[in-house]
Image (tube, rainbow, N blue to C red):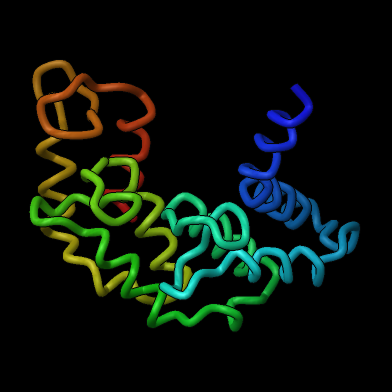
Length: 171
């Protein structure tokens, strides 16, 4: 039981770190943590492809990238990122349909529009994405009769993908 809890926490360390940094920044209390140590750990999760994993050496994934780039942006540490390399990796997430996937060789999912575009905005590379194709993909996932957005065209709509589809479309 203890091992699985430790494993769960290690997989979520980056996400929890981002949330803590974000919350502390909102209440002007970043001085309550060792920001330098947090940044050092986040940077240690950077991969040769420019992306970030959930732990050092972990596979790059857009959800982890958003958390890492967001935390580095808040702490004024974006200089630790190769913006062109990361931007290229993120732009390669766009597939033929215009949708975005979370990592190589996976299917597109509407929710990744938010994670990818937000990360690209933070590193000033959002103009590298074909937004027209992405908007078409998101609209193709919309249920025009009943409302809502699904993760892929012709699938069941849900609140999660509706939220991130709308957020990704207006980003």
